[in-house]
Image (cartoon, rainbow, N blue to C red; front, side, top):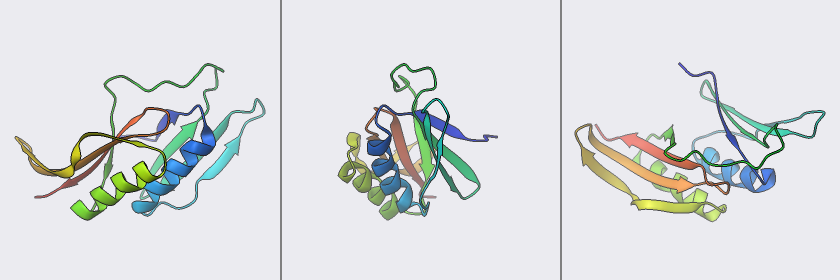
Length: 130
C-alpha cells in the first residue's frame, strides 16, 4: 500500500544518529544520502521492502511533527520493541506514553513502545504477541 514514508528534520545529523540507532535495531543499514542542488538533504533507509526517508524541508520552512500522527515499525519480539525504544532514547529521542511492554486491547496483546525523534515525530515499535 505504501511506497515510502518521509519525515522532516531540522537537524539532519541529529536525525541520522537517531534513525541509525532505532532502525539499526530492526536490521536497517547505513542510509543512502541524497543532496539536492538546493541543499535539501534526504536520508533513505531501505530495508525489508520498505523505504523510510528523513528530509530537510524543501520549502525552506522549519520541519514540524504531525499532531496525532504516529509511524509504526514492526518488531519481532518484546525484546526488540524495548531495544528500539532504548536505542532511540540513547540517540537523542524522548520516551513518551507508558514504558515499553505489553498492552491488552480489543486487538489482543500488543508489545509496544513509543518515542519521539529529535524533530518531534512520534514513533511506535510494535510486536503482535499473538
